[in-house]
Length: 390
Image (cartoon, rainbow, N blue to C red; front, side):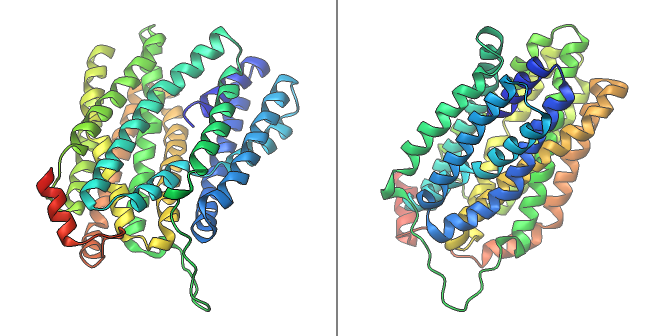
């Protein structure tokens, strides 16, 4: 997942000599994913992970292979757009599938917190290494080498993961005549979704701003290292956060995490050089993984068991839409006034994220207070024993 977008951009840019076309193909894939991932998630909850996602991911893989050959043969942009759309529409949110399985396997909220924190740490590690590997492959092997590696990971990973039948969440058969409404009719879910859109916009604007800052000081090779410092801070905090039990209410930890992200990224405007920026990004990154862990835990808590995959997928969709929004808005600002223009929008998005969280905080608090924990075999005695053991 962390290699596909940048590999498409690198490959199309190299063979078509067009940043515009490269950005278009990458954007089409992202938009198709954002539209179709929640639909696939609802089908997964209704029919099962393997039954829906195995054929879907195979279609996505075949489409990606076709896209590679189309780029090599300099096919028309229309062909590239169609193939990218099919690939994005059928890829689905594998992160949501994984987290839905953790909710099935874990026996207490404390265990689930650890599992989600670990997932956040692995996510950060993957998104640190993926773009670096893709860039190295494009420079040293072939501009499309990163896409070939992505195909292998996609196919092999899908089979190894989806064929594990014992951890697949059970299919929830709806009662006859009972209409299943979307989880997004829930005000608390809307709060989290809005927060994630602005959070994604923060990340999208940061990526461009860091690249622009590095270019301005003739150290473009440092952009990846600077971005990695933020992910490293998040990874370390995920390990620390997941290693202990927190007694504070989830809604409160969520809000203070969002607030910490906003305060952290606001300092980027005062970075006088890239070394200081790397330090500030490392510090700000410490708030990311715990906040995402809390969001996933809240989604698991407030989503009906038969719609958990859908709920988790909506968070991925919000983040993806936000990244695209942030890139689209920060780009022109950077062209006009340089990296500070991009970071200015980073700060704006960050505080809009705080506002979105604050507006829906009361609804989120009340919903958590009236929602039972959706874990198998969970009892208060289980939680107490697990807490004592930790």
